[in-house]
Image (tube, helix red, strand yellow):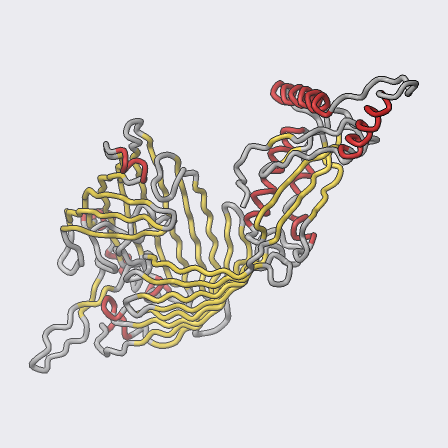
Length: 540
């Protein structure tokens, strides 16, 4: 695979055109292109050498040797590079030539090259060619992409032809397996997936995946990704899934969903998706609290989700500079059905990283929040849907959990917030059955993380570093008229908090932390402890 970040080089100019506008180059794996007549010229040179050695041969100047031509062309290219450094070199694209695609449709590749039509200088053309290279490689259907610029027709000076040579993937079938920890999951999961690339030649990616968690959570899904569909300018995705999640230990219910998710619009900063699912909540233990029992049964989920994401951090695993912002808005109840779940959910997450300047140290600040409300007649007196509420805690690093309020160091999954006693069972041998964590309609978290290198070369080479951290967060209930009892002072006064220090091992797949956490504030039923914690977090 070629490197998309390599600096473009200029290949050999065509001596038949203006040397200031002919700039053959390759943005990646650049092979020196020789003029098509080189071999013939070599033959002619030999013939002419023989004629020169014959008495009475034609009296004409001896042609330049190949080395002399190369020196001359290099001089012209150096002159062009100097001109590019001093100012724009005017050029426009005459034609885009695509080679090597035996299966992929031409319009799929052409759609990624539209940026070439707007260039007006050589500098813009170099930059646009790199963008096209990145876009084509991001389709994941080519083993290599090579872009070369050649001079345009002699009768059209100041033009260039763009030659795109692709090598389609030799093995369209691929698979992977790994272990991950998600903010929504109660434990680590093992995930495996199989992907088939470019089945019909439209850049389509088909995949199936299976995820299984130690805590009896499982998800089976299959989907397709289309980079261009019916003339749309953004990719379209579709995914069917079966999801089973066991929350008996925390909230006395199991969740099963069967549905379809459609990615309708996706760009660098914006994403719009529609989700249609049939959800079932059950309680096999028959010990759930009254609030949980009221929500057991079937419900139809029809929601539209809009996400705005702006991430300018230099890394999601170990950010040392930059900032990021994510806002997610979800509206449920888009079908006229009495069983349709109606709600409005809003989340945001803001991060800012300040580099300190020694030992590669950086101070990472973050604040996130979210609110969820049902909508419709009498919505203030209705409860919000249990799976849509906010639950804090879990075996994940808040540094990587970009997207909304989820994790707190030192607190277990669904380990804090409003609770309600489970149904009591007293048969002589069974004691009190504990409480159900009900989550909240409002959630806020904040974090501060100072990361720095250790004074050991081996650790620095491996990216292993230390960090000191502090975090705080809280959830509150607002629905069922509880907003009347809400006050900012009471909410801030009941914030849970923790501090700690740890060792971080970043990899290309996940971030592992070995931390010692000290709980500063918790309440009676909170599931938190002071001591050592080991977390595995995927990149956000």
